Image 1 (tube, helix red, strand yellow):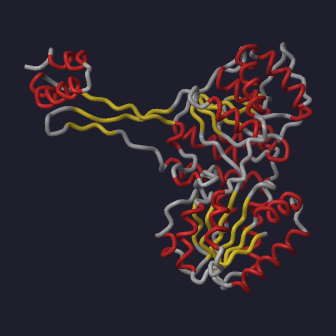
Image 2: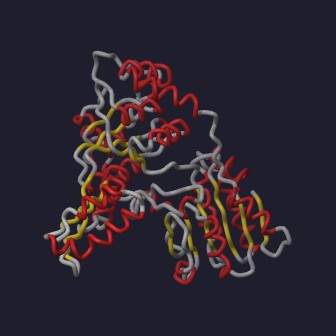
Length: 430
């Protein structure tokens, strides 16, 4: 863990180094991912079966059923403990309500020239959702990806998820049932992304691929972007907590660890105006690590990437936060609105002492698929719009209306050296 003080002479240099450190190596997987993508594109299901046997130790028989049946997903949902089923239902309800409010409105109007203009929105035909297997199999992520797609009106939603040694995660199946997923396929890795992007004998191609995954999955999504849409190229998780000394140090320590436990490359940053409080938080982190089942990952993250920044006044926090453009930003102060008003770059913001980031991961409603690695400067979290596209339209009613705008268009076309453009307009002019 690094301690920075804004009063130190080298603060600007050290802070810039933190801003510039994206913690995202290429892991040397790009070349191998390219080979996998091309292999699946060329050999289809046969390649999928070979990669699944190699990486997941599970045999996909070419004459067998590779899908997890909807009845199995329904059975997994029915088998949930009542409190867990209730929690999953609450999460789904709140996520759905928030995203329903995101649905865009069509436009259709006539301007002063009498020309009809507008745009209409519509969903993509099919979307693919990657759901990790094993330790990183999170039903909450399935809900956060699948529900916006269904709200958008996507007809076909196909989930791909690895089943190492044939094992399935019943919580993921239950979430798939609750979200209304249409297909669940027992494949993972870069080969699953290839199947969604190119299509195989069994799996029809999709238009958009979303969902978290390891470095191989992230690289595969990056390489197929353009052939299909993707949500984003995501990096390790991150949280920035802005807190004053009136907070409980244990609360803030738990908030920092809530992201550190995701991944050794995750980053947790605390900005405070009280160094004594900062040290209390660090002590609380150490205490909590001793009893954490995810302590190995959390310890590695905190030791390698944890940062505590002590500044003279929290009034300076928004400027630092804007440079960090963090995935999650907590404003753990009594009156967060003044700081929030100055915050321009963040994936999602959590206002006040009673709003831990973790509540946003599950049941608050806004999406938890958020930009990392300073990408919040130019992109947003997953939304209904990621599964929709806008088509504009123009209707010129008659020659008189065209005469009001056509000559200018023809003039510009001639200026650009495109006479056929100009001619197509001029033929119609009165």
